[in-house]
Every structure is written in structure tokens, then in C-alpha cells.
Image (cartoon, rainbow, N blue to C red; front, side):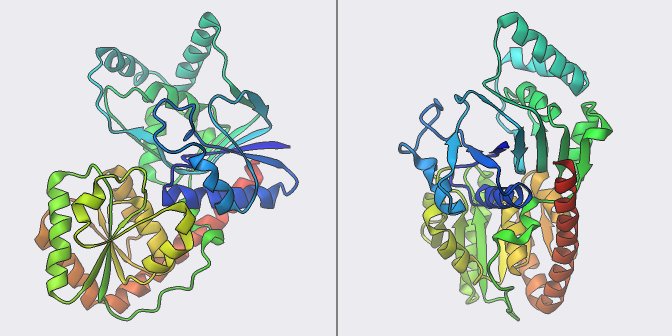
Length: 376
């Protein structure tokens, strides 16, 4: 059996590297003798390629397998394409093109099956076939939306979403998106994030009783006001004697973060130092996070979060931690300090709430494994 595991893989993003690891181990558990290939578009065939040649080969080290890695230029058919989760269907770029505005206006009015038929018709007319085909496609643990009105990606990604025989999403807003686009109920299911499947986590649950270390998980292209508030947060907490470390989950994407936060303790994830990065992260007692997997991975390590609701994805993740997290949607230093004080003062109660949240999501993850086994 030939299986392709697909996702935002090979770009050096911590959350997606963990999703890749979980997906690979799931597939090998279900199909131990299958021939498995990883899809990674971070290659010299990508005209936006900015990394050194064969950068994405680090995948083999993380999976501890000399696995084949392909990109969009590969031509072939697979028995199964397994898309291993993450918030990969969205677009925040607002292209000025009138063409895409008009195209998206039309396809937003059409059910996804009609969009797929239109794509198939255009491919026949232009004699443009797909390089990679599959007998079956399944997507699991996926987060969807939102898209700008002028998005260049919406049409292509709606076609891909509609091609799955089953699409298991991780939150209600993703369900709403699919329902609004006419995706048949038989194709979609809500569960949780793949990272709650605990195969990646070799670390003991943190056993802290108070907060004297804070991790602040940042990223590039944040609102200017939020960047300033996060800088101020490190200064204010530092004056209180709280040790603050800024973390980047993506060394390729976060080029500006080192300039914004480099005057503080700053740690950037690189795939060849995965274990060392987790050892540092798990020493924190509280996280402020602008990344969804900051809250999810931190929670799995026993660290509660203050979640900065910069987009739909972060607000949905906050609902996964309703007993232990605080979600903030206004960039005011006083609100962040109030959140710190609230969690710090009630830390053991917050940890009890986090244990409950993790238990709920791991219960969903066990059901997700059963679902995956059944639909594959």
C-alpha cells in the first residue's frame, strides 16, 4: 500500500513538525507494512524557496526514518493521502486583484461539490491534469478559516477540502465554514487537534506550584500594538523578579522576532534541536502565546496559557482550555498583567483545571484514533 502524508511539513515549524510525527506514527500503527511518503513543498521547485538546498531533509531525523520526501512536482498515484492536521486552510493576505474578488464572490455562493465540478471541467478544457492522484483522501485534526475576500487560495483549497472522503476538523468554526460552503454532512466530523494524541510527548507533566518563570510565544507580523505590549510584558514582569523567555516556534517564518525581542532571553526553535527546545519550554510555569500550538503543546506538558486571540484559530483553541486558560483580545498591558496575577494567585486551582482540560481532549483524541482506524 502506498500512502502519502501531507501537511505544512519541512518548513521548520514546531507545531507542524509534531503533527507530522503523530500522523506518521498513526499511519504506521494502522498500516505497518505500508510504503509511506511525506509531502513537503519547501523545496527548490517552489519559486518562493528561501532555504538552503534539501533543508526539509530534517524530516528524516525527526521521524528517525530514511523516508521518501516529495513535493508538488512529483507525478504518481497513491492508495491513500492522509492530511495530518493543523490550521492550514486560511489566508490573511488581502490581494488587490479584482479578479480574485469576483471569483471568490461567486464560489462563496456555490456549494463545494459544484466548485469541484467546475474545477474538473476547467481541467478538461485546458488539458491540465493533477500531478498527484489518490484512490482515497482523508483529512484529520484540521483547522479552517478565515479567508480574505480577495484570497488567491480559496478556490484551490475549497477543491482540496471537498476531495476528502472524510474531513475531521478540530473546532466548531471549521464546521461552520464547511457547512456554509455546502459540504455534505457525511464528509465532516468535529473532534480535536492531533497533538493531543500523546505519541510525541516523552516528557513528564510539569509539577510546579507557583509562577516565577514565564514563556512568551511570539511570531512575526503581529499587530504593532501587540508587539509593544508583549515587549512591555517582559519588562514589567522582569521588574517583579519573574524570569521571562521569548520563544519562536518557527525559525524560517519569524525573521523579525529576534529584532523585536532579542534584548530579552530569546529562544528560536530549530528542527535539529527539538528535544532541547522542549526541555527549555517545559521549565516554564505559565505561557503567553500567539500560536495555537503554544497553548496545545504547553498544555500537554502541564503549563497553562494566557492566549492572545489574534485570530479565529487562537480563539477556538482557547475553548479547548476553558477550565485553565484566559483569552485576551485587546492589547492592553494592564489586561495581560491582570491575567498573570489571576493565574499566579490561583495557580494550583488553574493546574487542576488544566488536568481536566487535557483529560477531556485526550479522551477526544482516543476517539479520534478510533475514527481514523475506521475511516481508513
